[in-house]
Amino acid sequence: MDNTHRTMANEAASLPENEGAARTLNFLEEIIEADLAAGKYKSILTRFPPEPNGYLHVGHAKSICLNFGLAKRYGGKTNLRFDDTNPAKEETEYVDSIKEDVRWLGFEWANEFYASDYFDQLYEWACVLIKKGLAYVDDQSQEEIRRTRGTVMQPGVNSPFRNRSIEENADLFRRMRAGEFPDGAKVLRAKIDMAHPNMLMRDPLMYRIIHTGHHRTGNRWCIYPMYDYAHGESDSIENITHSICTLEFDVHRPLYDWFIEKLEIFPSRQYEFARLNLTYTVMSKRKLLELVKNKYVAGWDDPRMPTICGMRRRGYTPESIRLFAEKVGVAKRDNVIDLSLLEWCVREDLNKRANRYMAVLDPLKVVITNYPEGATEEMEAVNNPEDENAGKRRIPFSREIYIEREDFMENPPKKYFRLSPGNEVRLRYAYIIKCEEVVKDAAGNITELHCTYDPGTRSGSGNGRQVKGTVHWVSAAHAGCAEVRLFDRLFTEARMDNIPEDKDYKDFINAGSLRTVTAFIEPALKALPHLAHVQFERLGYFTVDADAMPGKPVFNRTVTLKDTWAKVAGK
Image (cartoon, rainbow, N blue to C red; front, top):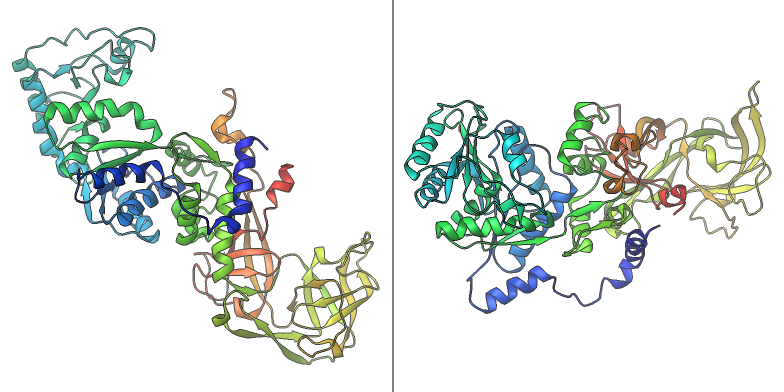
């Protein structure tokens, strides 16, 4: 385990003891409090500006929690603004999914805006920059522009079209908008400095030609603004006080400021925080799209995906994700967060809300030979020991039951306290049983166990006899069948952000990331609603999947009761 993983594992382990510790301000809160104290703003206004070209993932969830959380903390508001400036990749489907995810996380935006709302204003401002001699139309190809931009150590080369007259640039830009030129024939560039040490300031692109229908504006436009041109101006139009971006945009900030300064518009300010990097995970939209399109996963909402919809389907709760964002905090430097912290957060939440039930995933039949044939009785079980209002339920018990195969061992080692020949265990909520006989098939495989029970040891009877082992079970005569999907990490490599250049990230896909079994479940589990959260006692937390139908329950494993992966990985 490297230092990053060790630090996060230690933090997760110590969280319960530290929850009461005094909270310190992060650097963004310090900035906001200083601005408010100085009277710079009467109230703050933040924004969450996703591009609708894919589904949101857990990294976006952190940004959502931060932007909405800061505004709420300081009595401000947050806008939801869609950065829809690239019609070739954007769809209404993604817009709808983003709105659903934000609301599911527990937030509501003050205003819903789109960059496309501002296309007319952005065009007019581009014309202003042309008239000021600060923008020009370039006929060079994308490859020529890339080649002449220079390197970190070498300045770029001025475009041969850089000194076009203001009148010619204005005319060409108008004709670009009118659709006279094909895709790629011309671009509009800002005229800044081709020798600037920040390569993004070397005459950056402002507009390109794309003859593609837009999901909102249709075919009204065939030129579209670049992100670096549209973003700051959109913030300014909305009077955003604190434009909070991830750290990779820090080199974009001088350009953000340059456009605002030259246009003399509302001075929105950009601030950067460290993006979320999570072990055993990729969060590149390009890679996530490739996983979906090439069917490495079942879709954007595959429970192995880090998408918010995938996490929701797997059984993560909004509360657990908000807790995770809070525990990760706000940093100025990129780091890698151990996935075990996210899993700790969902365990913490589900432990409080999930009712307990019994299910057997790898069944071994047990016949209680001295129990009356055909008899049935009901055992009383506590639904959730963490919630006294959850009540109790009745569980049927009969002569034949199923236990987990791993809860029996024919030749056990010392200090093995589960079932073995001649050994006793307690059945959860029921009786103490003793293994008397092991039944095998012709191939020597164990098919069932014959046991006896002690009638005086029923749970709650007051009998003082104790045994060291307790196992869960379901009555064979009353059990239902369920499909149970056992999910694990999608990748085998922890540092997916740091794999060798000669390797493909898909080489590290975990072949065991999904295992499906048919389980026996107690009757109360047969008809739970979609997304109901439960704990299968001794096994983990599970959630009812969208594929479940009446008579055909399907459960997804959200997380195990303990972090078993660390043991497997040798951490």
